[in-house]
Amino acid sequence: MSVKISQNDGIMIVKLPDSLELQDFKIARDSINNARDIKEIRLDLKDVTYLQSKYIAELIAIKKVSISKNLKLVLTNVQEGVFQMLEISNLLDHFTLGSDYSSYSPHELMYLIMDPEQYDAVVDYIAGNFNDEFKHLVEDFLVSEDPILIEAALFIIGKAHCFEMVDKVKECLNSPYPNVLRAAMLVVGWFGEEDCKERIYNFLKDEHIDVAEAAAATIALLADENDSLIIKDYLESNDERIRRIAIQALSLINDDNAYRFLIDHLKKEKDELLLVQLAKAISYFNKPEVADILLKLLSQGTIKIREAAASSLVRIKATDKINNILALVSDKDVWVAYFAVKAIGELCRTKECGELLIKQFGKVDTQVKIAIIEALGKMKADAAEFLYQLIDHENEDVRKEVLNSLANIDKDMAVEAAINDLKDESWVVRFKAVEILEQFKPENYINILKDYVKNETNRYVKEKILSIVGGL
Image (cartoon, rainbow, N blue to C red; front, side, top):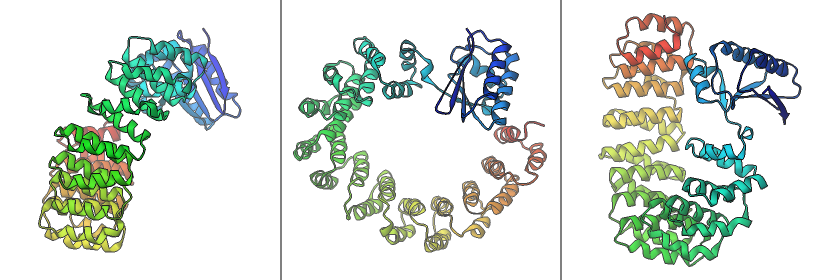
């Protein structure tokens, strides 16, 4: 077997044989050198199960040729033996690795689907290149006894929009396998098969949560004006799991009735996790009063509910409520203040917000102080001088967060603070300081780290520095 070379749409694929020889690499290099009108080289190693050390230099030579011609080089379909050799040689960072499923036969793709790490990519590839050959493969999957293959077949049918196979999808609604049921329901929803909706309602109470959630999503896709009214009754269930599915379904249906039912239920629900879900669910409705409801939850809920309310205020971009949220920064309840600051860091970019947070800094709990420092960094506030004064603060988390935020605001001050913090008593702060120096690479930073590492006692900081300076 010899080197195979193909070219299409600016990409040259060089497929190496399983029994490698030096001549193969020469052919590859010459092909790249003589290439015209290409932007990317894909060196296909699908058939190369092991790479002898003597060929490492040949790979590097191909890399150099690619760089000289300003071409992107990708090693595709790298097998485990080759990966390990690159890893042992410390060359993984020198190459870009990827997948090119066009090198595989349909039969080989079946085995790749069984790999959880490649499952989604292979399904997408088959769906995106669906043809008669792949259709036969999918038909074989559907009659197999392996639920993973059946599930994959259903998703391929759905993503390939193969409507002619819809009856086979519907047959899978009788499957005993939860993952197959889930896939079949989702595809039925994608295809808009309204005649299946009544059957799918039965799955809302399924013992497998993935199946119940798929039923909720599918009903939402197929919903008309009556479905919110039907699902409303599920909110009255004594089973919190069923109430959870009902909340999800109503948020997905997202009509006026669904909104009204969720708001009414918010007043009655006692379960903390479901209240968290409700806080998220109502944020998906475009209603002017949602922000005020979330502000109330931020002020009065449990820690988890407050966190969800703050996140939801960010999600709906509640910039018109900035002043209301800022007022909560001084709240006596630490967690109200903390999550208010977190929301401000995401929502506000004005000078006034930064000034108010700085003003409150000396009056709040340490947890809130850390949130303020983080928020100032996210806002890129004019706060570098203020933050720099905190590099010797008594709390290590404060000192560490100061470095993070300075890095977002003022590079020079961040570097200066990082050099200072190489002597910090906390290894966590020292580790962050090293990361800052690695990020900005100031003049002479390698020598600074080499001098410093001689006295470093913490294993993690020492390993981090050595990974940057390349050993001593």
